[in-house]
Length: 174
Image (cartoon, rainbow, N blue to C red; front, side, top):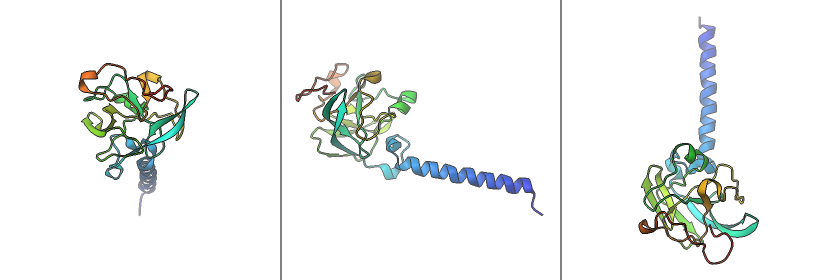
């Protein structure tokens, strides 16, 4: 005879495993899958351009494959991301071993650092914002993060600590 407590416990574990499996599967396909814990299936990231409203003005900005605006963190250097821990949970790093660009003419590279294979644009490590949705820029200027644009001034090791210049074309530029 089987014990009812063991059967109920087994059903409970199966339900938790099923829910956990659904959550993990959903997370792997979500915009937040650009975090360092993303699966190898998310190894390729595309950075493209899109129009978005930035502080009341329509601008061309960089977005990820899910249409989420990409940001840079002003204190970062060309060789090190300073976004870790709880800050990285609000501003998930865009990671990929093999990023591609579509419509963006800047230099797209990978920085191997604390966040794994973090995608950089013109030397700036890129991030998304946890509160954003596709076509929506809500993180502009928050916690020293600024939306990345195609004309983002290159960040080099010698220019670390200086603010990027406003690219030509008007608007906020960053």
